[in-house]
Amino acid sequence: MSRPMVLRGGRVIDPSQGLDERLDLLVVDGRVARLGRDLDAPKGAEVAAVDGLVVAPGLVDLHVHFREPGDEHKETIRSGARAAVAGGFTSVCAMPNTDPPIDDPAAVGFLRAEGQRAGFAHVYPVGAISVGQKGEEMTEVGELAAAGAVAVSDDGQPVWNAGLMRRVLEYTKAFDIPVFSHSEELGLSRHGVMNEGPVSTALGLRGIPNAAEDVAVARDCIIAELTGGQLHIQHVSTRGAVEIIRAAKARGVAVTAEVTPHHLALTDEAVRGYRTEAKVKPPLRSAASVAAVRDALVEGVIDCIATDHAPHHYEDKEREFDDAPFGLIGVETALGVCIRELVVSGRLDLPELINRLSCRPAQIARLPAGTLAEGSPADVVVFDPEVRWICQPEEFLSLSRNTPFAGQELVGRVVMTIVDGRSVFARGADR
Ligand code: DOR
Image (tube, rainbow, N blue to C red):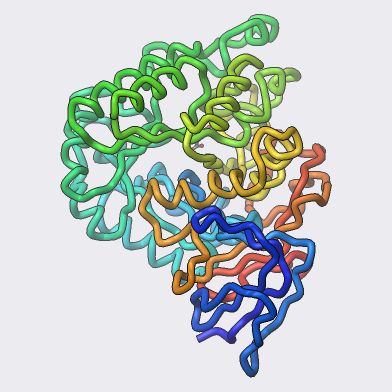
């Protein structure tokens, strides 16, 4: 068991308990033992003075891609889980689009075991919806759940078959796990490489219209209503999708939604210069779409923020824009991008940002996370909310470097991350 630990004098923000005050946090046996003023440190305890820093429940990312098995040169479970804690994430949900995909219980077990062995962030597997992620035959969802899958998704690919979406939303009810949907109508998006609009026209690149997302989100919300299954819409990027989700929620449909930091921060202008680091699915959209997803997050129509951390090798991203893969990395920039875009601008205060990066996502995937309540696992992030730093991908712990935020100033950075009461990341001591 790890040594007891006292974090002294930090600004403890825990939205799960409505807390925002200067307190000490005592960790014993991997759990939060007490929150209070001037706590006595037990004998042998490690004491860290964290004045001026925020102490919060560890962040929870519902959407990461670790590339193991199959593409370990881009990211392994270990490197991804290590990069996650450097970004303040103590729990991550790993998507199944590996090679081969996570579509059977043994693969789910492998992901979990490797995550535990790595000992950084908790790695929760998301099992595939369809065998081989081909969109045809449903996986053994119950067995995946029994093996530890916290959700199912075919992310990377949409479920093109509405009948399959119906069946999986029906079936998952018995296991009380959500269906995560990468909502994309391939008939509208298939040949596109960026957002359809004036920038794609100027660059001579084929576009993906907003409608490719809107149609798919509408379909999935209608099927969620039909079945009563728990639907979670991944990486929302359009106003249309927001309005459909809003209307579905108003009708009582069990739907939740996430938005990525990059869809909150960047428009399709980032693609100019044929910058493949900004090639992502769904694509970076217009300024009007960015405004819509920001407003939807603030209002709560979009429940939470998830990174869609998608590592790719630079040789793949060096290709012609048309041929480069979709995706960008996000776990090490998320907090700095979100504080810059949402807190500095006054859209959200820090407690609400932590709610959307920790408590809400933990609730959606029913994870034992997102709280510093006494007795809960001591998964904690300590960060400086004001420090300004330049994003330098060569400093990242991820094995990949594909970020459109390189060279930008971000605000707020993780100082220390604790998982199950163990310090797993301390800035400066991370190499
Ligand atoms: O840009 C993306 N990259 N979007 C996805 O849905 C999948 C991801 C990946 O796996 O690279």
